[in-house]
Amino acid sequence: MIAAVFPGQGSQAIGMAKDFYQNSQAAKEILDRAELALPGLLEIMWQGPKESLTLTENQQPALVAAGAAAFAAYKEAKGKSPSFAAGHSLGEYTAHVASGALTIEDAVVLVNKRG
Image 1 (spheres, helix red, strand yellow):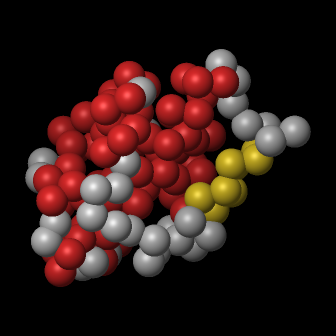
Image 2 (tube, helix red, strand yellow; image 1 turned 90 degrees about the horizontal axis):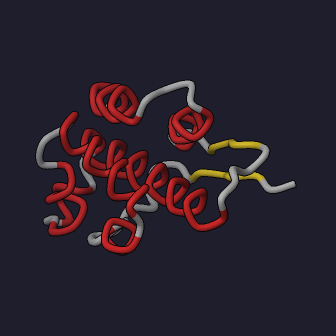
Image 3 (cartoon, one colour; image 1 turned 90 degrees about the vertical axis):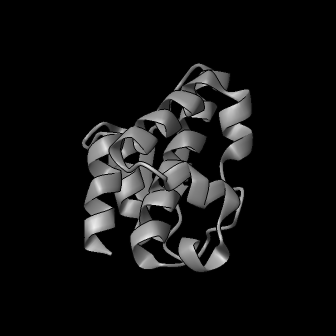
């Protein structure tokens, strides 16, 4: 059995998930949907500035989008899903996206407002 575990707040970095966007169609679709729900999110994730990315209202949706993109890329590459998904703090929202309980659009808007 394989489990997917998603991180909480504080693991963000400029350029996060860009490699997934460029190399995985499934991840690109997730990130494009997140961008449609929160315009400007990908620019903050990939270009910063760091001060903007570390603001809670940006950091949280960026982490959820990056985690969901990583999960989508994994599923695309392996052809299967992990048996379990869990998250630490904010990562619980990403786990809900991974399990299908929340859409990526709803999740990024929700955590943006939560911030």
